[in-house]
Every structure is written in structure tokens, then in C-alpha cells.
Length: 133
Image 1 (cartoon, rainbow, N blue to C red):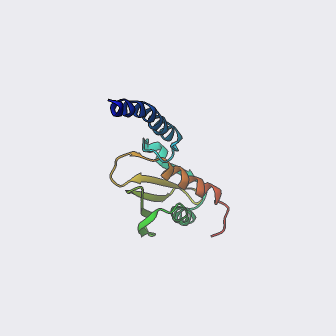
Image 2: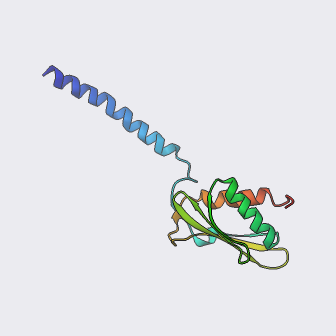
Image 3: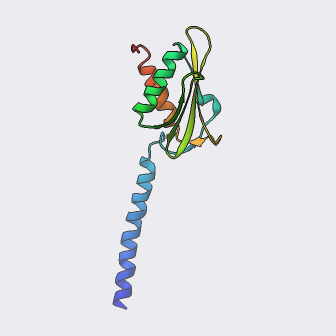
């Protein structure tokens, strides 16, 4: 009987603490690393640089973010890379002489993934627009 009473008391004391720890860990999760539903419009961005420079900056951004590059096609302007066990297609297209567009889309067409893959790539390119290549 004493053992049962001790077990119940310990259970009452331990369970709320572990539950509280789980809740705080969920609250601390970075929203850029948690899978979310992403709209297609958020996957594209126009940059004020030419297509070639955007291609090299995208390649540098993928490398700097420590994503794995699976395939590169420089003639067509696309890069397939892996991040968080998902594959993504980064395609670069020319708009005019001074503007190009970058689209980063999941290869499996499921737009439920961490938005950090896109935002970190776009931020890196924005920060290095004036860098010489």
C-alpha cells in the first residue's frame, strides 16, 4: 500500500513537469523550421540582377545554407537541392536585361514545408546583390 501511495505521489509530481517541458519546447520552436502550408506566390521573387548573376548567387546561397546540391543545369538555369529530407527545384529565368526571377518549388508538389528554405535563400541573395562574381 505504501509503495502504491509513493508511486501515485511521484506520478503526480513528475508528469506535470514533463508536460510543461514539452509545451515550452513546442513554444520555442522556430517558425522557419516548422512545416507550414506555403503559397506559390511566396516561392517566387524578382531580383534586379541579370540571370547569370542570380544563378551563381542562388548556388552560393544553397551552399551557404548547407543544403545538398543534387543536380545543376546552368544552360536552363535550374538547381535541384535537398533540405530536410525534401527535394526542391530552384529555377532562374530572365525577365529582361537587368531583371531575373527565382522560383523555389518542392519537387513533389507538396507545398507543406519549412518556409526557412525559401526565406533564407532569398535573404542571402538580397544581402549579396552588390557582391562581385
